[in-house]
Length: 301
Image: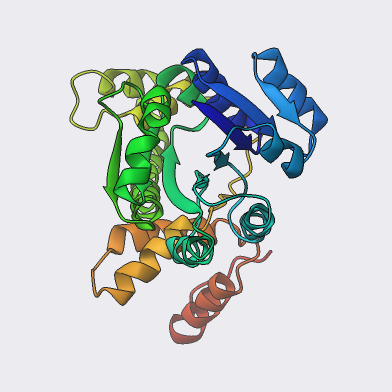
């Protein structure tokens, strides 16, 4: 199947390379000329603009976007709406908010252009291991695109699925990332407890390797944690500042809207926000309160 890939960053480029290995033809567009050259080096074609990309694909066209969620995705969809024809399909493989996905799909439906949302997990390891794909969209359209999903997944019958109508793929991926927040926070807290028990002088990499095999807490995240501890057991040179992509926030907001308790995801998000406050007014005020009611000493800055 011929595919136009929009966005050839590390993940988009790896996805294009995996599709090429699966025998598909891929033509890619990225504003970065080096990214386009990298795709050419993998055996794909490249285009210097969206117009060139659309012109290079046979109808009905399939275009897969791997661009940042939000404004850039909106701009890309708006541009494609003026270039594509009825029967063409746009796949959003990024981390878009599912509400934005519903809006974009409705806008393209008026032009009889299909829209499929594909929640994509696998990160930089997807090229070798395959990607987990959560696909939302019209069944007939998804069935037509099945060869692409089968080529990108770990196996044709594993790691991907049509989860429901348009919007459901990004909704599922959003909750997936919320769960990821909680899992990561639990590992981080557990290893921090181990690290603080200094009289045992625990080798945290050794512990992680033990847990990787046979333990009920084994996982791919633990595999990656073990590798990080092997490379840098003291976490030297790493600032305790943790970003969030937005999907944990969206998951928590949906939980509130649906009256679903999600305390672990909520606290893991708050912990990330807390990591960015290196001059916490709240903590200073807490120290002042303790001094006021109990005469407890205040540590001077």
